[in-house]
Length: 70
Image 1 (cartoon, rainbow, N blue to C red):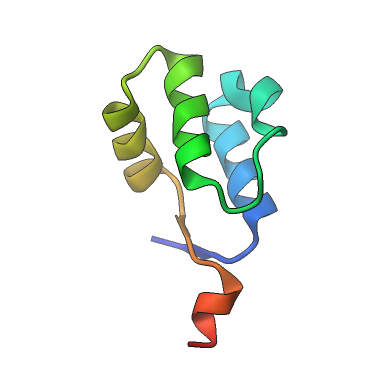
Image 2 (image 1 turned 90 degrees about the vertical axis):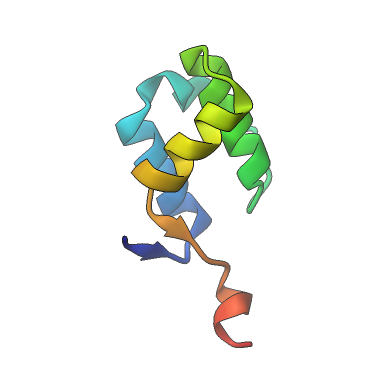
C-alpha cells in the first residue's frame, strides 16, 4: 500500500475512488481521518465501521510528515 504524506493527495484519491464525497470533503480539517470516514459513510450510505474499512483498505495509508521524523 502506498504511503501518502500530503493530506491533499489523500483527499484527491478519495474523490477519484468515491466521487460522491467531492462536495463535502473540502470542509475537512487537515488530518481529520475520522471526518473523512464520516463523509465517505454519509455519501455512500455506509456505517462508520464500513467506511473505516473502505478508507483503510481502498485508500493509500496516510502518514503525517511529522511522524516521519520521529
